[in-house]
Structures are given as structure tokens and as C-alpha cells.
Amino acid sequence: MKTPIVVSGAGPAGALLATYLGRQGHQVTVYESRPDLRAQDIDAGRSINLALATRGVVPLIDIGVVDRVDAITIPMRGRMVHAPEEPSPELQPYGSKPHEVIHSVSRSDLNAILLDAAEATGNVAINFDAEITAVDFEASRLGFSDGAEAEFGLIFGADGAGSPVRTAIADAQHCEWRTDWLDHDYKELTLPPGPDNQHAIEPHALHIWPRGEFMLIALANPGGDFTVTLFAPTATFESLDTAARVDAFFGEHFSDFVPLVPDLVEQFFVNPTGRLGTIRANGWSFEDRAVILGDAAHAIVPFHGQGMNAAMESARALDRHLQATPHDVAGAFGRFEAERKPSTEAIADMALDNYIEMRAGVVDDNYLARRALALELEQRHPSRISPRYNMVMFSTMPYAEAKQRAAAQAEIIASALADPSLDVDALVAALPPLPDLDPLADPDALSV
Ligand SMILES: Cc1cc2nc3c(=O)[nH]c(=O)nc-3n(C[C@H](O)[C@H](O)[C@H](O)COP(=O)(O)OP(=O)(O)OC[C@H]3O[C@@H](n4cnc5c(N)ncnc54)[C@H](O)[C@@H]3O)c2cc1C
Image (tube, rainbow, N blue to C red):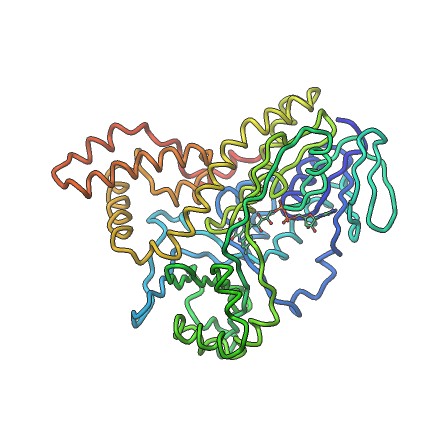
């Protein structure tokens, strides 16, 4: 590989990739535009969390930090659906197998563990407050926002949705990309702990308040609080411009939630509203000089809880390709994109679909009938059928394959519901057998 080797960005993808490269013995310099989050008083801020699933867990096993991460996660066994007009919420379990849980984890605590792991290789130096603003391939120079410069041979762009490395590859006419903005935005809120710092609602579930066009979700944090997110059309956010309107909106749609968050209106106006989009890029690399991964290459909307999981899976795949052909780095980059692109497109589509499932489907009788039949068929044919959600969240099957299988399964289920005389078991038995869906069953086999 051309040296100096640089990683731009120390989020999940950059910190993990630096760890993989450092473990291979490469000397790596990471530049991260933000301060070192390990030196911040995290308790003083809001605890923003996300859902970690199998595709993210597998790399953590690889690099030997899964126990550290396990100690700070909260398992979620299903969706706790707060349907309108229902007196109490209902748990829809994700699956029946022990590994079919997702894990609520603090974004910054997980990132801190990855930064420690990168440094522990002894080969990775991380520079914080170092924002890359220019990547000059001809001069092999990087420019920074404070006017500093540095040399590079090869740069890995793990610098998120606004990636300057992606821009540099595009300027070298090797990358085309676009952002498809969603016309829905989001806002994060905090549901505080109850008495004695206990969780005020069930912590071992992902709470959803589905309301058709919009929804609230909540994931527990270890300190007893929950990170809550409102997803709603941009126009809805625009209409919520006074305290009275916010109060009325939550009172009308989320009446069981309102008493849990006494400073709801204050939080609503203090916390920012975020945009959501999908990045679809082609041409992720430039010769053996640069490649992008994670959100820089394939940012997606958050409704499948897979953006970070996919970013980590990409870092693992890139490491595998580089190890397979260490003397053909440009070829490794091309093969990495060829492998990942169909799958990142597939998860981008499935994440968009899942928004409709979460905000409307989970209380739709048709959806519930389809899901009940899918779970029943899974019991009868565990080697042929698995719900789409489970293939995405609890396996490492390529996302593209999960999408394709899910479409075939959906067709069978829809036909069976439309015509109960159909021999549905025969149709399911004709599906190709599933690969081993439980990569966590034998973690030792995963270590690289
Ligand atoms: C509301 C919301 C909820 C989400 N929930 C989930 C979830 O439950 N599960 C899940 O898997 N995913 C979730 N995601 C997606 C997840 O946050 C991203 O997919 C993930 O953070 C991508 O990791 P990354 O390392 O590629 O990019 P990032 O996390 O964006 O990291 C990029 C890093 O690069 C740094 N950087 C940027 N520009 C520069 C520069 N010019 N120079 C140097 N450094 C730079 C940034 O400071 C940052 O640290 C969610 C996203 C949103 C918006």
C-alpha cells in the first residue's frame, strides 16, 4: 500500500478500519474533525444511542472488544408497540431464537471503545480537531481547515455523508453520487429516568408509537433514560412553531408519552431538527490512492437501524479484500465495491420500506396477518424461510440476497392469505435453503 496511509474520520467505520489496518501491521494516521469524545464529559450531554445488530457485532468479535461493548448495551427483544387508543402497549418479539435481539448502545461509548482498540494496535495515531478540507492526489497533500498540510499516499474516506474524500474522487472523475433527501425529518428528545433512576418504561424493547404519517421511537440507555426520536414529514415540523402547537400535537397523538417527559416542549425547541437522506454513489475508489466506505459511500435512512451496522460490515469487507490481494490495492478496492454496492443499494431500499412498516404497518391488520404467517412458516420450515427483518438484523447474509429472498417469501405469503386452499408448505419447501443464519453461534470461527 502507498504510504503514508491516512484514514479520514474516526466514526464507527474509520475507527474500525484503522483497527483492522493496524492489526495487519500498517502504520496509520487518522484525522478526525471533532475533539476526542473520550475526553468529554459525556454524562453532561444527552445520551444518543443506536441499535447494534449482528453485522456490527461480528467485527467487534474480530477485534476482541465484544465483551467491553456487551457490558454497555441493553438487549431489545422486540418492538413495544404503543398503538393509538390501546390502553397498554404490546410486545411484538423479533424472533424466537436467543440471538434474535438487537442492542441499544450509546453512540459515543461504542465509538470510544473503537478508538481505544485502534490505538491499542500500537500502529494507529489519531489526530483530533483535524478537519480535512482538501485532498490533492497530484501533490499527495492534504489540506486542513486550520491551514495545516500533511502528506498522504493512500487515503480511506470514512468521513460520513459529507465526505471530502468522496468529493476528491469525484473531482478526479471516478465517482458519481447523489443524495436523495427524504421529505421527513427527525428530532431527538430525552425521556428521563423514573424514581431511583429506574427506566420509566420497559427497557428491553424498542418502543414505537406508530401514527401513520409519523412516529416516535424510544431506545433505553443504561442510566435509566431513553433516547426518543420523532420522525415526521418536514411540513409537520414546520407547523410545530409555537409551544402551544407542540403541546397540542403531542397531547393529541402521544398522550401516554407526554406525562413521562415534563420538559417536552423546552426540549423540542432546544434540540435540532435533522434531515434524512440516502447517498447512492458509484465509483468508490481512485486507483490505489483513495476509497470511501460507510456513510461516505452508502448513507441510508435510519429506519432499519442498519447504517452503522452496514458501515462496520463494509470496513470488515474492505479489510478482507486488502488482505486477499495486498499487492493489488486498486483491484481490492474495485472488488470491494463490486461486492458491497448491490447490498448497500438493497439495504438503502429496505430501510426506506421499513419506515412505512414502523409508522403504519405494525398496527395494520394485513401486516400483522402476514407477519403471523411468516413466523408460523418459519417454525415449520426453519431452513427455508425467515422474516426479512430477521435476515437483515440477525444474519450476515448479503443484504441483496435478503431482499431477494424476502420478495419471494412475501409473494408466497400474500398468495396464501388470498387463497387459503393453496399448499403453502409446498411453495415454501421449493425455496432455496437458507444459509446458516446464526453467525454468532460460533464466534471463534469468526476471528481474523
Ligand atoms: C437519527 C439516526 C438514527 C440512527 N440510528 C441507527 C441505528 O439504530 N443503527 C445503525 O446501525 N445506524 C443508525 N444510524 C446511522 C449511523 O449513525 C451511521 O450510519 C453511522 O454513524 C455511519 O458511520 P460512519 O463512520 O460511516 O460515519 P460517521 O458516523 O458520520 O463518522 C464520520 C466521522 O468523520 C468525521 N469527519 C467528517 N468530515 C471530516 C473531515 N472533513 N475531516 C476529518 N474528519 C471528518 C466526523 O466528525 C465523524 O466522526 C442512525 C442515523 C441517524 C441520523
